Length: 297
Image (cartoon, rainbow, N blue to C red; front, side, top):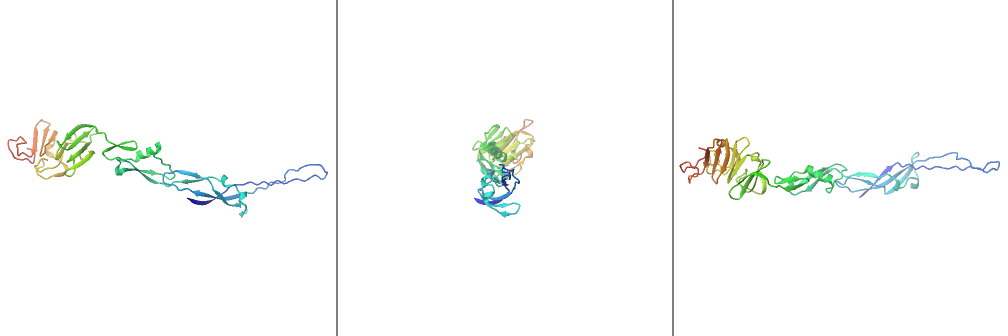
């Protein structure tokens, strides 16, 4: 705590009463005062500076003592008793500093919400105003949904679900987001592992999805994007090079539904025709031979 001195002008009024004298005729009487002399005094007072952190707000501090007193017309020092006491001195305002406060929140981006606080502003997480500030600053991770000033694990609601037949699952949510969980190819690298439903933004707006060691999606413009393993040409791109990032496959343009097997991809088109590509060592593609296909026939 620090003690500051502040010179405050406090006016003390001293009225001198002049006494009268007796009349010469011997009659008893008391004359009216002949003069009022008024003097002004200025006191200097001490205040204890509070230690304020960001968000503590504005506080009023009373004077703790009178340090000196002067007569204002002459500037001469006089007795402190002539000035108003410290208890009568005005209180002094102190403001907490401006800055930001990090609030730890599970599920928030970076694990926290950073709240900006103005000079002298009172911030309390237990008040509605404090909760509103947190809510305004809060951004949740993709696996969570913002509920007021908290991040809650997203309740999964979907209109379509696809599974790898093993350990990976993807859905199209009611908001047309693609979210995946488990282990599999989910739009990046060759394999991902998500313990909670995680949005796959590269497939945002997909109308249909299919997944396995590779993944394909029919997009809102009826194009088809595929990515992942391509060791048998199952992506239909004319080669056997894996794709870490999904690419548009022109051969699937116009497909109305799509299916991915372990090493194959098949699609049904608007004319109800079926076309497949990929591994065919067991006649899997139904083409009357055992030759793999790297592009749709």
